[in-house]
Image (cartoon, rainbow, N blue to C red; front, side, top):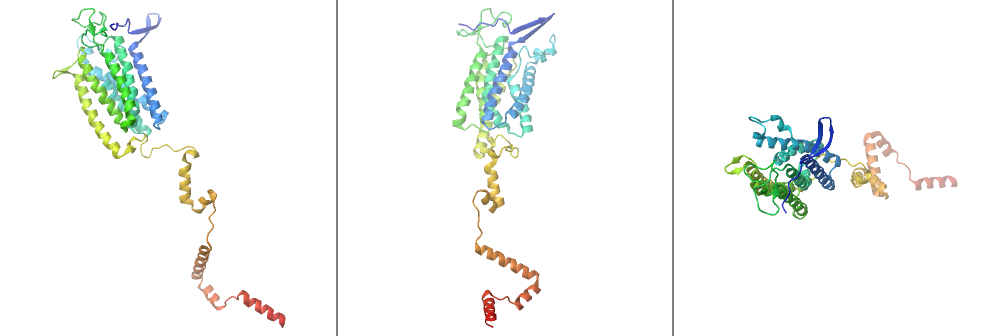
Length: 364
């Protein structure tokens, strides 16, 4: 029932002369993980009101920065593998054989995502919330690459699901046939379980405005602490603990603190979960989308014209017309005082007086 070791860690495609083209399973796993993460984040981000082109831009920046950050973290924390007597420093650039630290990948990938988000006028925290479940799935798939490379396994075990390691990768001091903890499998299952928890808990617990991403960091760190302690590969030890254990504990504390801050901020101002930054909202292209807004502005600005546009005419009252005529007459009189004098001296005859004058003429 033990897990067998893989027969090879790469696929041979074809040969041209003395040159063999091969693809490492590790690289395939990383690529598939990236594609799965992008598919998940795109669907979640668009459902939240985001733009597909924007999330594609952010993903490209994050992937490039993430790969660089992951490799830098690995080379810095395991520098003895590449620098020193008998070592080849150029191998620090070769990622085909593995060596991408998730801590560096997430950290520098986040910087790339922040740059892209600012360039596109969107908030980073909603992007992180949309990404969190997909990132965990990508990490789970990526751990399969460790299996094909026969690396990062745990201490010896007698459990039925122990991992077999061939003689070429067997650590010094262990007998052939020794079974080891399949830490790649433990982390794979932990990541998938954590992704499911995030998806199910987001809506009931209102984990928005970056809270879901903070929860992702906390959950992953919690699992990584005990998994890291199972591993027997060479690592720097500080105060009796592996370097990655200290890194994970710091991340766990930071994630919980950040979650509490984000929780308070979201409760006070839910708008922090809006996709777009203030003043960067896209302009509606169709009248259908902005019809109600235009109507309300038209009513406020146009007054009586808006009533006509809506199908009802506004008929002014007689009193308002009289007031208007009176006001107009007074204004004209003030501007022409001689007209006022002429009006007072020669009062026009009324209709009754004209009729009386006409009848007297007829009698005569």
